[in-house]
Length: 265
Length: 214
Image (tube, rainbow over all chains, first blue to last red; front, side, top):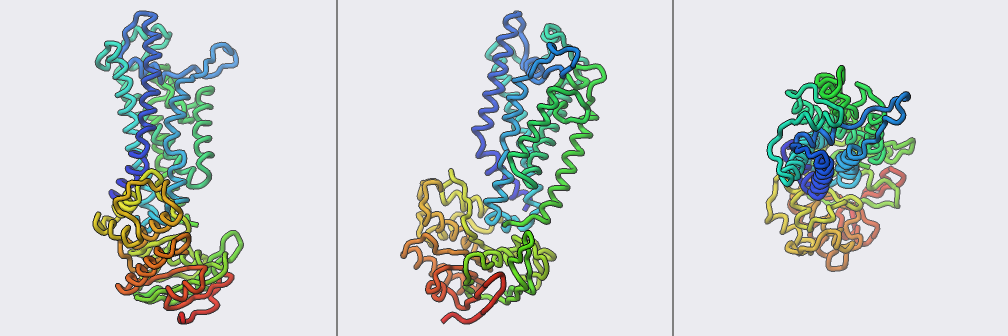
């Protein structure tokens, strides 16, 4: 039954939103193009990997003694606003409007919730593939093939990647797992309060992260220069995965507990 | 099969919506729930469907207790108020999506259910283009397509034309004949008398009368 439930959620939650994935890809591509225009000024030929690092490098946190040093990361917030927009109403609507049609067919409210969480895993993987695809496409249009790191791009930004061999741990594991954890939190918030509240809380967390540096705010895990990849003593993959893991586990268990008591009224 | 509602009470935010309800329902019988708006008809349907949890009492489906031995009746079709189908799907695609959850029926049965309620299975119009009556018919088709042992229809003939009402009566009759427990709520007393074998009158969350339909 769980497999059938996931198939249902894939159809209603992911396939039906193909245009949002396309919009996400185009947005990533547009920011990648902008990054290339900037690189062209300095006659640098970055790869798709450089562009991804550049897009998610983020900004320095707000410091009272460096008022002019703070730069609001518009590309980062624009991408994240869309990333967490996909399922703003999904769980809420599925419960509020369609539960009398679907829940008795699932035979178990726990399956309903677990399926939503597993759909979220697939969603994050799709986002990762779409990001890579569109950024790589723009890179190819600029004559850059392959995913190789070029340190001169970041020297220009006065940033440096400290652990080149760990780039993919951050980009391919830590960031997707953080998106997974935050989306699952967003889905859970839809179960216990309103969808808008869930979305606003997630965006609020990200907004706080753009201003403040904390090892405990998951939004910081999506900003690469807060991590050990680009900062001495920054947040490590282990810290990221532990906090994200706790969020995923707690929201999964709380969701199951909430579902037991939840009624289709 | 038998459904037993035993001393079932449901309180929501301090208001008692079902008050010590006792009821026995048997296979092959259509029960008509009668009562004013807010009397508790729909809430009792939700209770039998397992969609709400009791404050006290229980519902048994056969020998299994809802919420204890099983979460929902194993074979049930429900039409409650306005079901939300997917706007950009056709009627058939909407039913297919629901049927695929349990995988009990295939294309043939889905199309038969659509035809039975008077909808064209080949209609390419999307749900958002459906009239109110067509939406209601699709809801009925969704409830009966898997030939469930329990069929619950809340106001099934709302917004349906005369021809459609005849078809709904036929569907209810067929469900009864194959041994299903059918529960129908309807505002129209005459229609209810015609549809149901037994009338269960509900007032303020209590069953005030249970009699044979005449």
